[in-house]
Image (cartoon, rainbow, N blue to C red; front, side, top):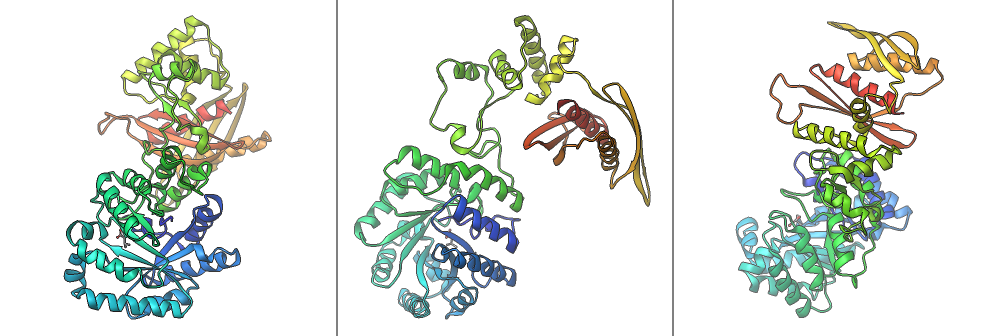
Length: 497
Ligand SMILES: CC(C)C(=O)C(=O)O
């Protein structure tokens, strides 16, 4: 069960709109093919009500309503009515899984709680809902009030409940404890369907989820990019990969090939950035940096493991820097279709090592520039040159540019305005390209940063991601002036397309 839209949205600073929730729900169920999704907590807000409504309407039309779940509360039936009005059919009722929570938060006895839970379940069933029950703080309950947990499970297992959901609410468990708690419960209650809901406070979410599966749990709660309360939940991509590789007898419906694209979409909608080293979906995780690894890739795949990028619709990359060595550079040249003599390759390698020593980040797209610079006879022609420009920026007047560039030796001059100086520059460029019957690549992302180690008057680096003929192209420019660094990045792009 994917709970990106409920627990994932509890990531601090994240809030999805109703349309974003609908798009994510559709992708999760139809492209990624998770079995179930939890999409909201009842009664949260009017916006949440509209989101649930949109999703249930779509799910109902597509025969998927049984896969859409909403978290509800023991509140005398208010959340049951909220859910019904929103068109949902499966409720995940939040109840207390530890005596501590029950005594100090609800201030109730087990008998009072059990009777209120039973009344809510019976009400929901009478209205045609399916019921799953969460035992909040279950992990603490198993540690400190096991008699309570067992008596509660004895009680629940007699009721018309589909699944019992076991959260490690505070992310306190370690794998050996997960193993012993889960195996004890699945043995004691062979007819009950148990889900395990991990939190990642000790970075053990994936390990704990795997251990729960190894010990017979029937379902897992996961989130895209490991989003969720505090340190998040167990990340969907990592857990799917490890189960597929290490627990092969367990059937998993999720399409590995869609994990990356769904991750990126959720990243964009949530604004919650995926760390570059996040397994399976992080930018760097299929990049070989050390030359010895790249060398091994060419020699009988010596550094192969089962986690191959192609499984996830991704590709192997070779980083360039001071540790990259000849093999990494050769692999990148191969991808760019550039051939160099041994002597030239040595010179280029040396330059990349020097740049790496100065903490410069070198990307495969920089390679043609480094080569032309190093070899002094340009392998890459500077077909497009930015010759001159005047940029204006003044109060209450639109920024403007007068730009002169040459393309294949022919000079063009154009004037344009924009929302900022760089926007004006791009607008002028666009006019020149249009007059030549060409289209500029689309600007997808624009990031500015001070290079590592810089102080207040350091250089400024602009990294621009372009989309060109279905491919992504990243170029960067370095200058003390931010607009100039963006113009340099743009000029690089113009000579690569
Ligand atoms: C709200 C509950 C179900 C939860 O997410 C947890 O206990 O971790």
